Image 1 (spheres, rainbow over the protein chains, first blue to last red):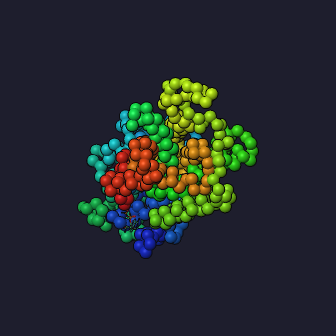
Image 2 (cartoon, each protein chain N blue to C red):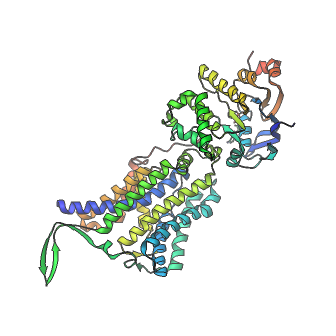
Image 3 (cartoon, rainbow over the protein chains, first blue to last red):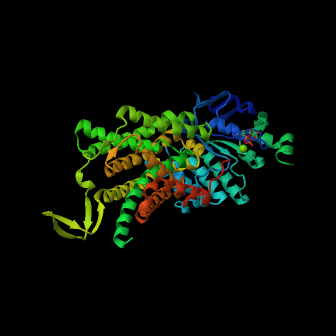
Length: 238
Length: 313
Ligand SMILES: Nc1ncnc2c1ncn2[C@@H]1O[C@H](COP(=O)(O)OP(=O)(O)O)[C@@H](O)[C@H]1O
Ligand SMILES: [Mg+2]
């Protein structure tokens, strides 16, 4: 595919003797939202961890913009333009909101562009602006999620991966987060989403994968999956 | 203790304590990031004193060049120790790192004996003489044996006052570095979450190396001041101050920089006061610090400003 920004081929990841991901292949097109759904322990976070360089794959190949990033490590991968919003938000509790965002912009050189990014994030999440001087640890769960997304935007990434961004949030905040994801995508950011909230995620996605115990069991057009018998029964509970 | 002696002891204790604080900061910063007690820290303190000594002796350049050179070398040495000894075993169990730290400490001490010889060398001529003279407040002039001498008054060595000032400047610099620079910010984020920091595109190993360098530079400052105070250098000079600074760091709450400063000051003052009150117990002054350590560990292991250790999931 020409406009393929991320390609995962036969990815395998093990924790000691436990095989968490058993040879999956995923493709993400530039400018799209792609979702991975699957129950707890299916290997979704492990997959994102392998792409971002936090976890070393035991086999397979990961290509980002025609470049092999399989064993690059987290820092280098992030510098190439992949940003992960980790499961559980992972805000730096001892750093202020402003510093958390500055951490996202750690390798940016152009101050003016960084200032513009601050404005972009404030437009998306106005509440963060009021909290700039507060330590990250004092924010509510929803605000922390906004900060986690905002922090990743500060790197100006080409691909953002989000690991269960709606987990544990109040319904109104979930709405806000999903709106933000869509509005980012409209600006041209490619998004790889991992979600428990399958209905909402599939609604906004172009393509989706279903992961079960480390294998892709189903994949296809998000709208089609949303209508498929299997997905409706297992993941939507209808 | 009369008020005059009390004041003298207080100033001397504060000055000694500020040296403990300077060293304790390095222990606590490394612990805050790696949960590692870097037992080689006291030996970097010693090395800085030797670097100063040989720089002055060999180049004949003034002491301030030597001090800058020695502090920079201590920083490089700290960085190097991390690279060579600790980085390769970053993912190993903590006990391996601890044993390595003790090994590095023995290595540096033995290296110093081999290179510099085990004989203490006088530091007296290295720095200006006036540092070891006394500041005298009050007192009265008398003529004895045909010479004018000042009797009475409150006295403390100039080096005590200089030590206090230098330490204060170093701590302000450290505060600025940790809270106002980008690298300082990364040090704070590394201390809470290494993987997430690396997700920000930060080379975590470099930040850890910088932490070693910064702590070692402060130990270097301490080593030079120490050598001026007791004017000599020898390969094992870092052992006792290093151990006491470690006690100070634990006392203040290991991982906390303000805690290390507080712990150092309190330890220095109580040590000098104890010797002042019970001159007969002066021989036990080193044991005293470890007695304090035992008490802290049994009463409040997290120290004055430390947080109780959270078990990492
Ligand atoms: N650090 C780890 N060590 C050992 N096993 C792990 C680790 N992380 C995840 N696993 C295991 O790998 C499998 C996949 O986990 P994960 O990728 O977190 O799933 P998901 O994100 O889909 O819930 C699970 O069986 C989990 O227990
Ligand atoms: Mg997960």
